[in-house]
Length: 130
Ligand SMILES: [Mg+2]
Image 1 (cartoon, rainbow, N blue to C red):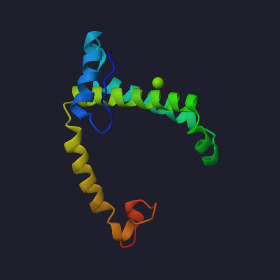
Image 2 (cartoon, rainbow, N blue to C red):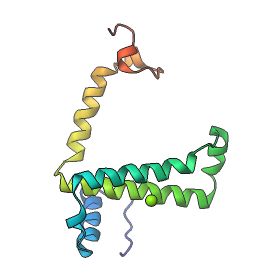
Image 3 (tube, rainbow, N blue to C red):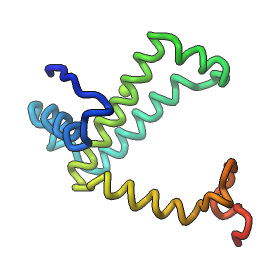
Image 4 (cartoon, rainbow, N blue to C red):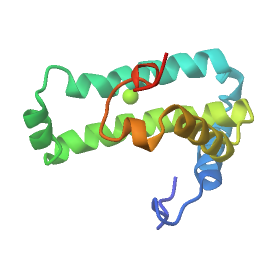
């Protein structure tokens, strides 16, 4: 695949999904991309990302994030996850921007700023929740 000059500031979600679908279709892999297996593959790739941080202290992780080899591994695992995630959104026909906007609005109701500011408590443990 040719590289482009796109980055997070200039690419759209649609462009990223087009790259992933093109890569998939050039290999005739759509036949394997059912939602169940894509979700399983996402889970496996998340585990691969988590393994990079496993048993590392927060202080060690801060150092890891400055290490080029670590960053390369992390970026590859994050890209594996995003590839599969975008494949799932294509197969399941989910407009992830719309879905994200709706979910953030729902979470804003569950986590009002005045009750959740600076708190890691789950919504049902916030003051005034039953
Ligand atoms: Mg991987």
